[in-house]
Length: 187
Picture (cartoon, rainbow, N blue to C red):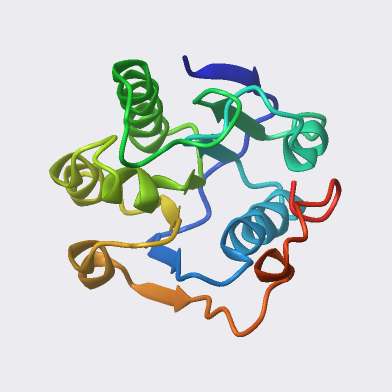
């Protein structure tokens, strides 16, 4: 179930033409880059909505600090733990569907200058949400809204629609040596 964490502040839209950005690839840093963009926007008084797909009630450090800042709304969707892409459960699809509905509302509401859809690329790749629905969201995005989509396995059609595409390339990662995610660094 999508959970509304916080919503504060207001601002007038600064963009005459918001872009679509995609952060993808197997390397570390996709969410980090998107949250960096969000923090930069917040530093300029812009209004930000971050919709987390597949990142439900888990102690993510970014949610803890961002929920304390003005002008940011956080929507978290999903269950704790990882999703098995070979065994998607109906409730996982429903949670992703709710996250996409929240994203659609955030993009079209006129309330936000920047909207981040964290892990939406992977949600599409794992058929939690329909690619056509994400394409429709992009196509109906108001001109003044900046939109960032993150996650591995970005579909080529999303890449074609985007104005900015950055691929994070994994050269080396401690996960490969059995190092688990570290609090304060990976979550």
